[in-house]
Length: 160
Image (cartoon, rainbow, N blue to C red):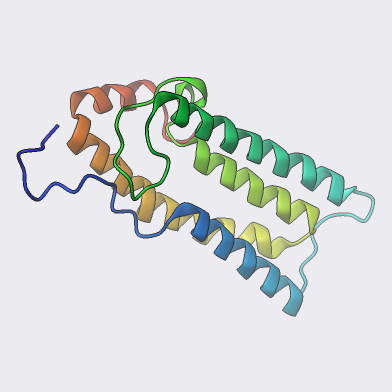
C-alpha cells in the first residue's frame, strides 16, 4: 500500500456510480422504445416470464457478490476505500460479478419488455462501466494492493 504518497486517493475515482449508469441505460432504453418501438421477439415467446427469469438471475448474481463483499468487510460503493481483495464466492470466477449481474439484469428487462433498444443500451453501458469504472478500479487496486492484486488478476478473469 502506498500511503506515504500524498497524491494517493483511497477510492477508485470512478466517473459514475454503476447503479446510476444502469438506471440511465434502462430509462434511455424505455424512452427510445416508447418513441420508436423495436420489438425483436416472436409473439410466441413468453417474453415477460423469460425476461423475469433472466432479470432475477442477474439480481441474484449482484446480491451474491454484494453479500460476499459485506461478509469480507470491504466497501461496495466505488467512492469508498477498498479494504481487501475479495476472492470468495463469485469473485473466484470473475473480478466483476456485480457488473455482470447488472448486464444480465438489463438483458432480462430487454426480454421482458421485448425491446431491442434496451439491448442496444448494453453497448454504452458496457463502455461506461469498462472505461469509466473498471479501468479506474483496476488501476486503484493495483496501486493500493500491488502484487496481491496482480496475482489475483492472473488467476481470475475480468468478466467470465
